[in-house]
Image (cartoon, rainbow, N blue to C red; front, side, top):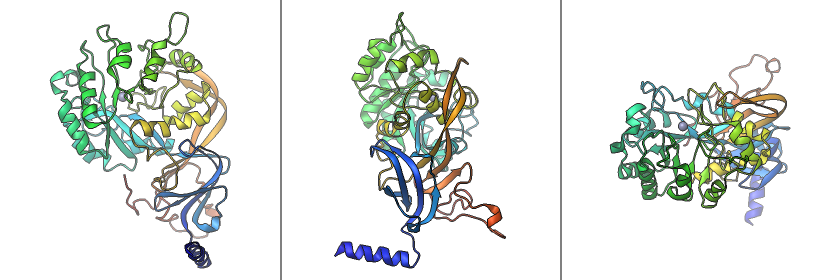
Length: 431
Ligand SMILES: [Zn+2]
C-alpha cells in the first residue's frame, strides 16, 4: 500500500512537472571507497544531501541536470593539513600572515573540507572560529595546537609553560563539532614534553593527535615517536620529509616504519614548503610505504612553490604509481576516518552533498618537490566542478550553464536550489 502511494506521488509529481531532485550529475564515473563504487553512475542531490545513486536517473526527475560524462565524480576532497588562520595581523606566524583564506584555494581544486593543523590553540581558537571558520563557505575543521597561543612563531611555540593539556582538552570538548584533534609542531628543544602533553590532551578529549616533529634531535628519536609515544590513530604528518629516517644504505624502507603502521600510527603527506622529497617518496611508494592520507600543508610558502594545491599533490602520487581509486580514497574516505568524521568523504545516500567532479588529463606534465627537483609524468587531475552542501560552488568550464547565444535577452542565470556562485547566498550553508 505504501509503495503504491509512493508511486502515485511520484507519478503525480512528474505529471505536474515537479522534480524529485534539485540537482542531478549524470553520466560520470563514480569513485567512492565508502560505498565500494567504481562505475558509471548518476548522482542525485536534494536538500543538500545525496539522495540517490543509480545506473540511470532520468533528467525528468531533476530540476537541474549536469552532464558529467567522461569525468570522475568523487566525494568532496578532504585536506587535513592546511593553515587558514589568516587576517590577524601577526607577522611571520601561521596564526597570521603565513595562513590563507580557505575559500580562495579549496573549491577550485575540488576540496570541500579542510582541517587547520594547529594554527590556533585554546586561547585564540574562539577568535579563529569567529573570524574564519564561521564565515567560510568551505567546511573548516581544526586541530588545536597544544600551545595555548597556537602558531604565533618564534618563542611563542617553544614555551613549555603554555602547553596545557587540560585547557586544550576542555576547549576541544567545548567546540567538538569543529575541533577534531590536537597538534604539536615546530618544537626545537630536546624534551618530549610537547608530544606528551598533546597525547595527554588527545586522550582526555578522545581525539587524535597530529605531530609535526619540528627539529629532529638525537634526544628524542623519530623512531621512538612512532613506536612508543604515539597512540593508535595518532598522525605523523610530513612523512616524506628529508629528516625522517626512511631508507637504509641499500635503499630499503626501514622496517620500523611498517611496525609503526602495524601499531595503528597514521602517516600523512603534509607536503608544504619543506616537507616532501621525491628521493624519499618514490622509493617508499614503490616499496609499499604509501600515505594513509594525502594532504597539502597549504600556506603562503607552499601555495605557489612545488606543492600548489591538493590536486597537484594527488597527481604526484598517481604518477608515482598509485591507482586513481587509491589516490581518491586517501584524499576522501581515509582522512575522514582519521579525524573521526566518517560522515564525510563519502557519497552515500543521506550524506552531505559535497562532491568533486574531476578530469583525468593525459599528456606531459612535471611535478616539483620542496628542494626543487622534478618528476615527469603523464597524468594530471583537474577540477571541473565542485558541489558543496548541494550547491555548485565552482564550475571551471561552465558545464552547468547554457550558451549565451541561445538565451535571447537573458537575465541572471541559476537558481538558489543548485547554484552557489551566481545566486550566491540564497541558501544558508550548514557546516
Ligand atoms: Zn603545517
